Length: 483
Image (cartoon, rainbow, N blue to C red; front, top):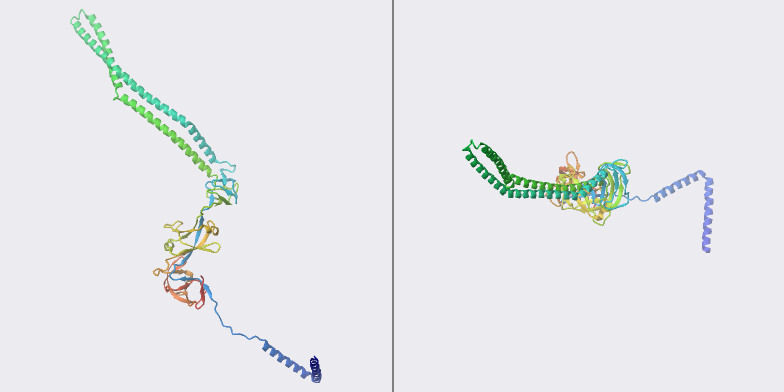
């Protein structure tokens, strides 16, 4: 401790001595001292700058690795198109008949049963409904036809019995006439014998005509009476024979009249049944027409939206509401992509298509069907059946992106297709970038026909080439493939 104190005292003594000497020099030579201190200060600044400057490291220039999408030669290229979503459990109810919205029975968020009315329409703004009146008229006509149907059929049955009885009576009359033929024949024969006797008597009296003139006259008168009676009896006999014969026209006419009457009555009976059935069908048709004024739900569900309001006039085809089905049954979802005929023929069925659903969800599916004819203008349909568990990722009538494989996988005979955006062109040549040793390298190619956003590459590609599809690279850039 004493040693430390002695050292401190000695330092103070030396400082005091130096201080006195320095002050003496400054007072004796002020200008020289000033410049000396200034020079010393500059030297200190230079030394401090030299010592405080950090050492600059030599930086090497490095290129940033770029992420790129590629097309592998030998795999089917992808053509991106839009597909429309169709859900069987989501239905847009449209108006099938023009009218005025009179009543809205269900609003958004309300449950509705199958067949339950959704909206009520009227023919005018006062609420009148001509189709309801037509239904009432048809109902009255059907009820009247139904009430009188049995009575009219009973009346027809009675008329049929009358016709049959009339035929039986005609047959009985023919039998009676046939029985009277023998008596009439006997009368004719008797009259003929009497006329023969009168002729003999007249011949005898004529021999002495002078004395028997009065007797001859009375005999002739008697003959005339018998002759008239005999002619009448003969005519009656002939007529009776004609009427009583089953082979003559009167008998046939009676049979025809009976058959005609019965057939007419049978036709009337069938017409009664037909009129009753037509009345019933007319009532059903009127009920169907009336139901057009009351759009109903095709299934049990929940009303998602109502497009109209009370008092609004609608026409056929006007959207009324959207209903979502509430059921545990499967809800098939179909995605339909519309493409040209050339693309439809080239779609690969060996490689799956990629469906980009909402929510960054990708789904690999093979087409369930490709139409053989155009279904929308000149476009063909490519159908995909989407599993039910993706129902919340899609909306009815919405659109999603679909990558369709064009061509056939790993088939060297097929000319490869690459997107047009991957082609670079100059006046003299067309070239692309491929990946070689993880770097972009330019290569000249010979192009063919263009199909949509894809182009044929006829020459310049090898089986193992990886074509860069992005346009953010130049030759020599390090690249990595986006998986």
